[in-house]
Length: 81
Image 1 (tube, rainbow, N blue to C red):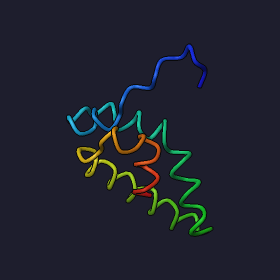
Image 2 (cartoon, rainbow, N blue to C red):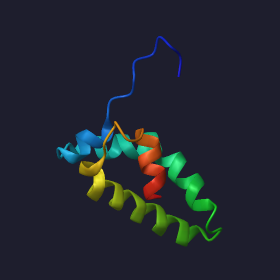
Image 3 (tube, rainbow, N blue to C red):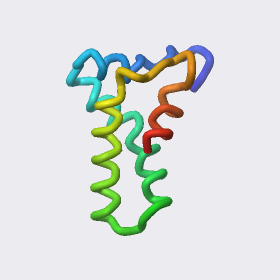
Image 4 (cartoon, rainbow, N blue to C red):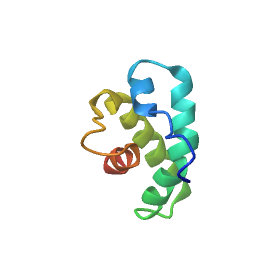
């Protein structure tokens, strides 16, 4: 990210507020991170797909617990993954 680019909108707060569009934005923004972490655990594609789906469900369920004073969004998501 360059210094002149705006900070990404806080997706976890939007998810916690029930913004359906934020879920897709979260998948788009953090999907590669979650996939890379899941791939470290298994090479089985079906297992990876299941794991990634479960991780995003956990993110959705726990979005309201996110505290930006304690961690960045990517860190929070990586901790769940």
